[in-house]
Image (cartoon, rainbow, N blue to C red; front, side, top):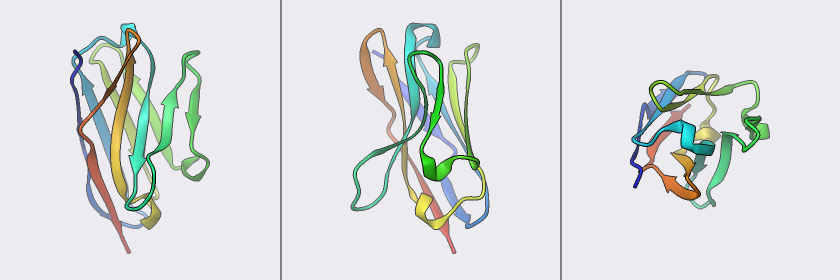
Length: 115
């Protein structure tokens, strides 16, 4: 069993920045996929940014150039730097880890962008 704990969400004005972190109790060396997803009110969960099985970084089109995903293998921490935030980025953000073939999700952290 792997625990994922997200932090860093909050309320920010449009144009501001936030940095999300996800601490994993499992080693990243046993994972071949990790990323960030979000769910906005009334919408389905969507992928925001992730490292795929070939370690290629992928971003949702609407966040390209504004968000940066990174990871620290020493600390088993996944991060998402979010700059130039827009109102439409408001959502609950979840980290996801495919660990030894099993899918794990964090509890989510709320990001609210105000005008």
